[in-house]
Image 1 (tube, rainbow, N blue to C red):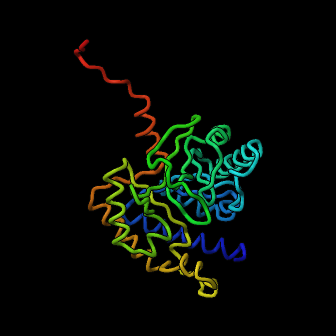
Image 2: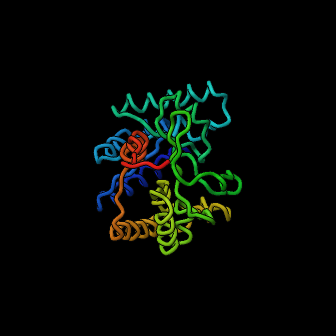
Image 3: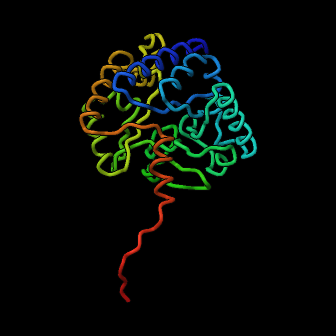
Length: 263
């Protein structure tokens, strides 16, 4: 698509997401590239004013930080982080790589990030195979890795195109399975999920699959899903809040000691 059409869809989709989250209300984490964020400062200002977290998606979505020399990746990511912070007067703590293919934790630490949410511990043909990686948070080189959620065993994703194509029942069943086996549920979506894309763009079976049931159909599904989450008693927070309130506090808590000992 032309760049201006990509921006239009992303802006419209984000507006739909913000309105949906405000109904419940729920706070979420938005990963934005500097290339996109500078085109829509009012929209970024709105999501910050609503209490959501702004995190970094890099300089440009075409960048491949995992394939760059470390020094180049550090420079590019540091620039993206600084630009977002300076333009929107906020502190950027998190990063998610385009296509979930990020650099080493040491690179992100050098660029000033606290956490990385680039890991999707499943297999996506043609993109990545992280099927054997951990499904729970871990700490490496001073950076917290906070994976997107997948089920145990089969590693079924609960996000994006899978949630749309397989529907609400699939989304609920997989989310319940995740919540029984991990300390959090972290699905991810794109603004385009919430916008009906011109059918002329769907010129291949892959595009038809990617855009299927987007727009109003998925907005309705997510409204039911978030209502179900509320009925289940799930507590929503941003990734940054989860890292600070759960992971860091747990890491810094003193070890418990028994009043008695045996020998």
